[in-house]
Length: 325
Image 1: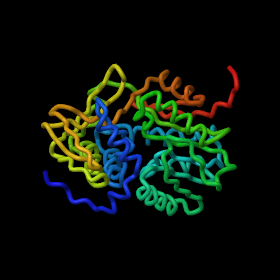
Image 2: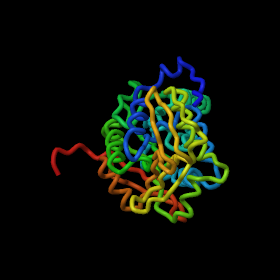
Image 3: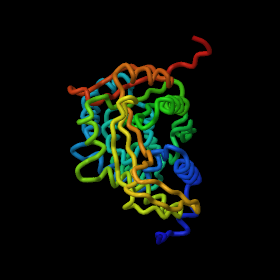
Image 4: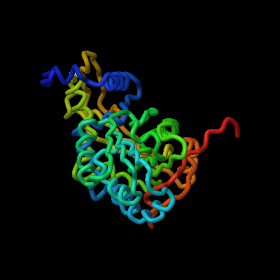
């Protein structure tokens, strides 16, 4: 098997957690790699393309909701907060929110540093009077935010139903981490995708143009580039399925044939039909969403949804710390 050309400098600089997660994920059964590793620069670009696809209803539905809820959100949240966006990506929905709530500062947080800085620069140009403080990091853990916003009340922003990528236990842990990062008196504006028919859901994760397939397969390209991988990309295909028991869409990379390869000097064999589980997208009913938020330390204040009930945006406030019930 011919080994792809690897930039040795790039490989040596690979994120050690990325290496650990990939090696552990390919070793375990069933095989699975955390979805956060989709988002290198190319993966972030592909995801932005996904959000513009006709099949991908969440982005346009949530964007319309943000425009509609603005007057009420301004009243409930008030001006002068530091808006902290978790997993900001290209921040396409952010201008709508910033114009709405009149913030004192904006802190975008993302794991993809280059993409984060590009987006932060664009926001700085669009809002020249607003302090924009990009923060590169893993927001799944409590973070110490920049000192410039330490004394400001916070409004967390977590759009796009990204919370659905996590299993419920991890989603609760994330909400608690956000609660710890944002502090007392904080509020959180979060998007959650609703449960609906599979014939509406699945095309959003397996589009006709193949952009989602490219997004999924890009994970293998990243492994080859950063971890000295020899994975033949043509040996895998993108697969999206609805798991009704767990109320989620699952994305997998399915082996088209028996395949052998190396990653970071370790050998792996995957049989035809076996998959690498790469992403979940959990869907939540109205009561499910409220239970999830309360479990994570947040009290729902207001909920907005579209006429078809496809998607919901929820405003919650941080629950006070309580030593007892």
